[in-house]
Length: 261
Image 1 (tube, rainbow, N blue to C red):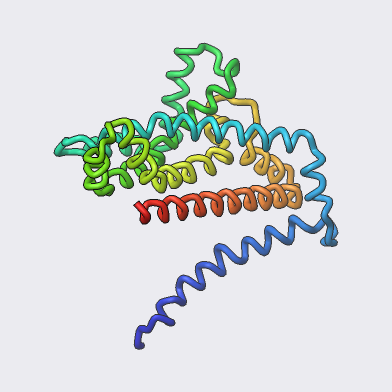
Image 2 (cartoon, one colour):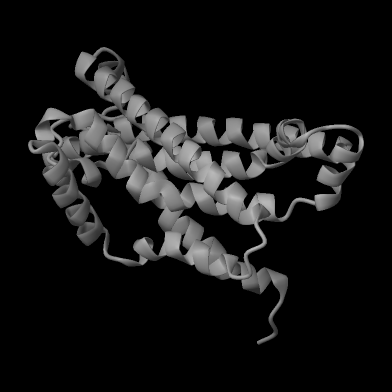
């Protein structure tokens, strides 16, 4: 059998049909039908008229925004120092940050829970703080890696040219390094913000009684309300697609600005 580009595409097409297209069709079917299989928009209107669902959505946004901000504040200095340093074993230092990801997720969160129990006593007293700490601990490497990769690939001649033209270290960072590292920042934000809205396992393991979008969807399916759960999943999918489009546009603008520099 002669391998051509068309033949090589067949496995990918089969994969997309089985694991992307068909699940989406099922999701749309349940989202816009009722228990009798009749078309309805009640699931959609029910979500936006349910104060508990809206509150969960807003709480999820708050957790994701704060977690992303904390990860960015911690990750950028780390990535910048490593990328700009003259260390011979930078990859070893980066591996130190990545190594916790090799440990089982449940073990890592259980260890974090024990630490927080010693520091706080009753975990239930600080649900939002514990959610942010747990999410930050879990997703910080996903913010460090893209920023480090972007900064380490910057052309050093641009910084030298800026300083030759009279810019000091602060101005060079703000007008050259920071703008050109925005693609890595946007990638890191995408990799942290979106999972932080749905990763309810962290909250459950830290004895957090509050809901985020992932736990809300799970509660619907656990109660065998596939129609309501599918609609919430579809709404979350729309939010994720919108967020991805916005971040892609921002990266495109940054790359075009970098090309002009």
